[in-house]
Image 1 (cartoon, rainbow, N blue to C red):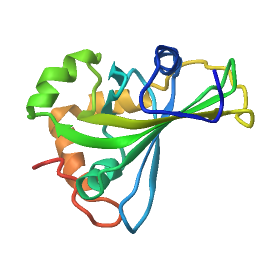
Image 2: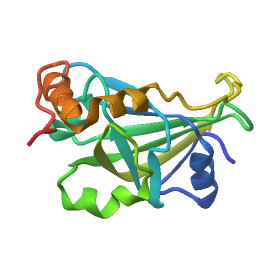
Image 3: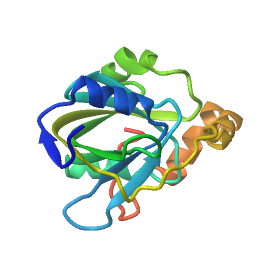
Length: 182
């Protein structure tokens, strides 16, 4: 795989690489304010085609991605090889957040296993793919996914999650609405 290469879409080799990853990162930002960079795990990412990926966004302590995308529609997803060839893969593009009652949610939620705490689907349209060397990324051994978030969400139940969203997920850290309860 050539390093330092930019493309307009994912190749079959890069799709295979993404599907092997246990962790990816999502970055969003508005024109001003804080940049959000979040790690994502569990079985929460699907590749629809070479220019479209969807991830199942789970309940967290904030909802920055949704707020940022409402105001500044740009996103970067990053994957790092922690085993095998040293690769960093970035997907640049735009994205739309879909909530549970949306037609997009209803059409695509079955692509994912049922995971307690699921709150949004983020539909990413990829317009640039960049592969670079990951020679500075450490080699690490994967043991397993943490179950804590799912266990917590299951314990909350639907009503408890909605109350949590009302308290913690309706505005960003900079005070911008996320649209989660619209």
